[in-house]
Amino acid sequence: MNEFIIQDRKKLRLGYTTGSCAAAASKAAAYMLLSGRRKEHISLETPKGITLELDIEDIETAENAVSCAVRKDAGDDPDITDGALVYSRVGFCSEPGVHIDGGRGVGRVTKPGLDQPVGSAAINSVPRSMISRNVEEVMKLFDCREGLNVVISIPDGEELAKKTFNPRLGIVGGISVLGTTGIVEPMSEKALVDTIRAELSQRRAMGCENVLLTPGNYGAEFIKTALRIDPETAVQTSNFIGDSLDICRELGFGRVLLIGHIGKLVKLAGNMMNTHSKYGDCRMEIIAAHAAAAGADNKLVADILGCVACDEAVRLMREADPALERAALDSVTKRAQANLARRAGYEMGVEMIMFSKEYGILGETGNARGYLNIIRGE
Image (cartoon, rainbow, N blue to C red; front, side):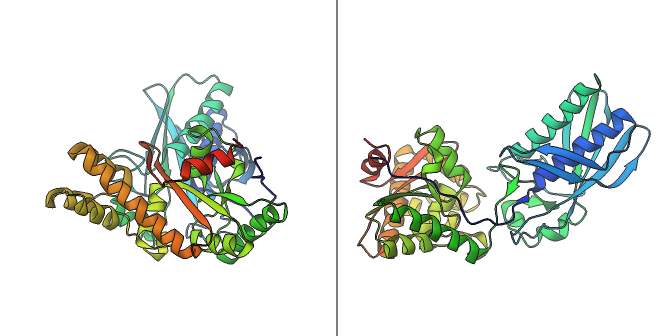
């Protein structure tokens, strides 16, 4: 019987992403450019299905372009971009369609393996899609057949980027425009851990003996598309994997299955039970060490250490020797499970599945498939 049921979480104030700000400013600027009318408020539907009503600030109009801004509101999340103005300048161009680029304060990608190719503005794929969709909606409204250039700028971005991992990732000149849902989920540590505890307590009180955990949106999407399981089956732990295990053990769960992206779960092999980047970023060091133990030569190890994303490290190993890649990732998975079991106190079964968006499942522990069958009610 499948007893993995979602419950309402404690209400915290949501925010919206830099991607939502960029899309809303672009929609408003396009509207003003094509209509000739001032627009001080705009509606934006986010990928999460939440509609935002946003104020438009600092409007500047020219003959062939309009610039305006939306102020980032991170809600109850301690986000360094909270309060920053995200600008969009929309102007006519000779090529049909919507053409997106970054301006002042938006970083440029200089290393492979990230969401955007080398040389591109660090505006990730979901925000790009949001910008294009909303600008095209306005173009259709006014039957615009000309092309439009959209340039996203964040004047404080270069200074803000110094407080992020962007320089290490090879993103120079500013911050990234991010967001997978358009909405910022609150990240107050105590509030989030309390929320996780409340959700797990409710499930245990309903008689559930087994629980599925995932860190966040990537895991939820993978559970839905690759494993054909309702993502609401999972309790989202955010970065608090260790705390979540402590709570599961305290509440007396019998089994835990953790499913997550390699970018998070690889840190468990280094015994990092809070995977937030502010506590460190040992991903490449861990992968390189396990690759070396599996027989990687000095050049491959050095190349892995130079990667900015786990998918890039996986690609390098796969191209060098698929057997070496398999051995290295199996080793990472076993070490991560050993650390999870130690944290759980060996009283509770803990299994895990590690995946990437590009390569699918990269590692799974011995009883993970059995736990999946339990979750599916088989």
